[in-house]
Amino acid sequence: PGTYTYTVTEVNDWAERYIYDRTKHTIVITVTDTNGILSLSWTGDGENEQIPEFTNNYKVPGDLKAPTGIPLHEGYCFD
Image (cartoon, rainbow, N blue to C red; front, side, top):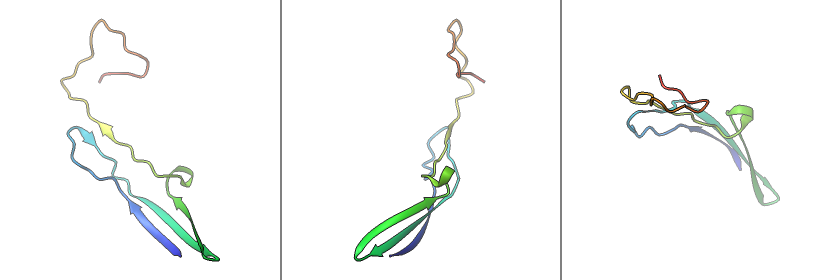
């Protein structure tokens, strides 16, 4: 029984072109003993205190050009 606090971070494995989320999240786990039965509850600092999320980005190579003569679907773009 007790309260345990953990800091959760993402491991950056230095994959080429990826930009990793550097956010540090905190999770608090509380363990209780009710007549010999252990149970736990937890809270996180994610949205609505849910499981924290990490957002990574992938950097497209600068020499990648938009294809010509092929329509792009909505939501796709080339910079």
